[in-house]
Image (cartoon, rainbow, N blue to C red; front, side, top):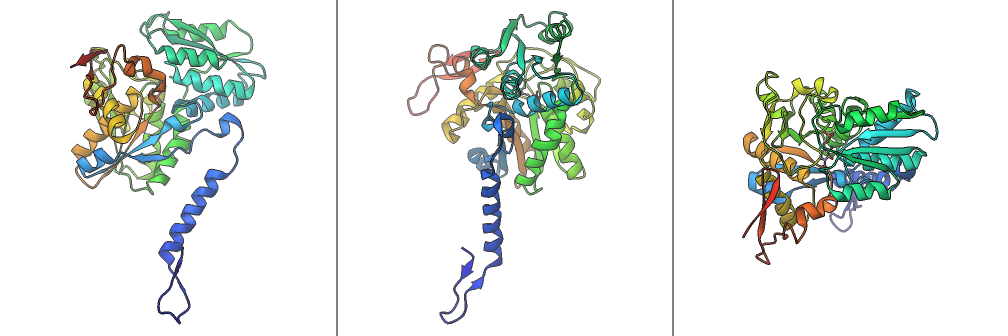
Length: 376
Ligand code: PMP
């Protein structure tokens, strides 16, 4: 690869640029091939995918971190591992113990895997508004699942409080508390942030994503801001019904929220402990309507072959808006949180939402106040 033959009698000369490139590729391959141990060893080091259509349209490089490639299928595998390790390090759980968590599902799926790997029992409380696929998968993985009514955090019956009480009432059980346990944010300071920095060779101009617990956004923001000495711009992306858009826009004075959203796992009614320390570092916020999110779900499938969940599509819409605001030539990164496989009945079922493909000229789905509506 590295030799350049000049005139026939001359000795082959080594092309330095090509050699560096080859060495880098070999190193990547070597890293990729090093063996890892069990489920937990396979978490992280996900690829960065260039979204070619939107990059061309904006004149920017829009990249998305392929978090569906984590072994449990979502970005939350990282947090799941870190909160369990944290509980172990703090002596809150002993061998054979029980991990209890309140979750929209993905953290639960990550935890169910981690618990199997480490020999713990896993108990999950989740709002009954979440997709059936996630509940089914959790049960397949051996978790005990309690779907509970979706009530606000202030209500004692909220899934998080139920999870806390369940753990408190049992021996050798820990409530990992992903919303306010900053071990969650640490997962992204120590893994996702450095991966993005390395994969872009530090040439990143903007980062954006939505928040559930806030661990992903806060951790990555903290790392990128420190590494770039504040140069990298960060926008928070928010679905309808969440308060963080108005919180950032008002400089922390308002937590106004209204409407509902078809998205799962994102949107917040409060500033969690994971967000609290870093929300001041966020430069701006974008509110993304469901119509745009759903359109992007289908567009990513149609144009890029990417089959992603709604929160990921919302993130890509935000990256697109950020690129438009920052202007051509910028490198913007966002997160593909998970794949669409766990939302098929909600987002792609022929019964409720005939899959939109331009080729077949089939109907097109849009979201209106948290419900899918078909446009013919
Ligand atoms: N997208 C999906 C699909 C999720 O399940 C979650 C976590 N609930 C997020 C995004 C948000 O991640 P975080 O909790 O780190 O803010």
